[in-house]
Image 1: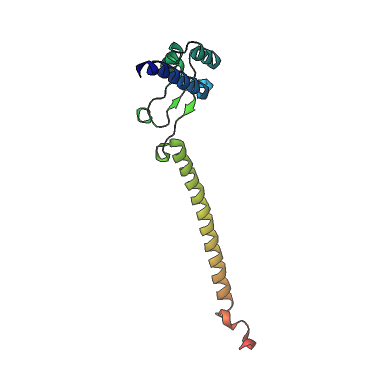
Image 2: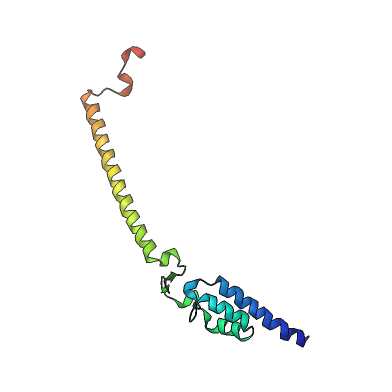
Length: 136
């Protein structure tokens, strides 16, 4: 059992490091080009994977250790909407636009109500039903 583990563990580590290297974006690979890391992992199948895991790519800090919206190597981590200043700014701008639109609608409504009152006063107090006396 121990002999099998001596062969299985380095093979599993090599496979993990190889797949991890292939899936890592180019901008997160450190010290060497990605192709060089692939060759190192495959040629030095015990030491290569360990070196890749230790120093081959940028490791992200856990989400709680960074300030909201903090950038890491040009990439942006996920930030909750209520912690994202850009999202909150867009809400304030949207609210200001909605407020001005609402004020315009209210002014238009007041103008139309005034026109309606003037028409009703100009008609001499006729109601809507009195417009066509022959219909009754």
